[in-house]
Image 1: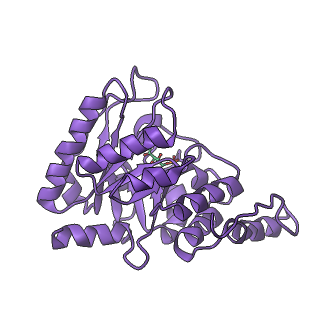
Image 2: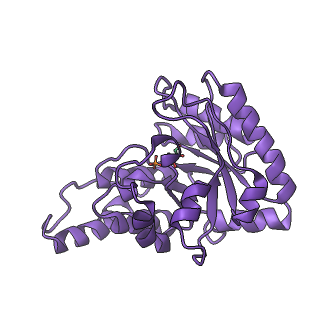
Length: 279
Ligand code: 5RP
């Protein structure tokens, strides 16, 4: 790996512990003004100090993030379909590498839709982007997007992650699932997990905990952070799980403290989750 590529990778996966907390705010690229992300700058600003990197499109980067902020940028460069359109998998590369360099992106992010109508097109997009990324020393994050009809199991996610790695992606984002260690085993590049739809906070923390315990390099999480009423505490808790190896109860206490201060929950954990350290 060349110096530039290594340097950019080190901004995404922290070399101290080989872990990563990526804050995802790219949802509008196909969902429009997603709940709580209607005014991106409001949601992004208080969370920035707790993320290692920020994943978003060039439009939200230019309009909603202060360029004086030093946070590494993971630039989403695929899109072209919407939630109300015919087929979400019909994506193209929307942003050139020249533009990514202009925006000082540390990583390029692109979705692949394995098993979908546009599988070939999205995998070709990934391969082309890796070729460009390699030329300029910019790593590529492959986002394994899952269609409604696709099972989120280790077999399918393992297939998608492995294909991403084979095509040269440097990092892959997928979902946590049962037998997640099988996904990790078959994938020679770092795997990070998305949070998916909003869960109870304690369940989202458990998801992050289980993922890193089973070999994930960290998270690329969005809705479970910024759709929480305790978004700052939530990202602090996720960060503590990823970088400080806190267990779920310890991390959830970060939220409980804030909830108690607001008088919403008193005393002990309402949902005790016993998590063995070997989980
Ligand atoms: C959408 C994405 C999202 O950034 C990713 O799914 C993470 O967000 P969330 O935790 O809300 O699922 O890539 O295609």
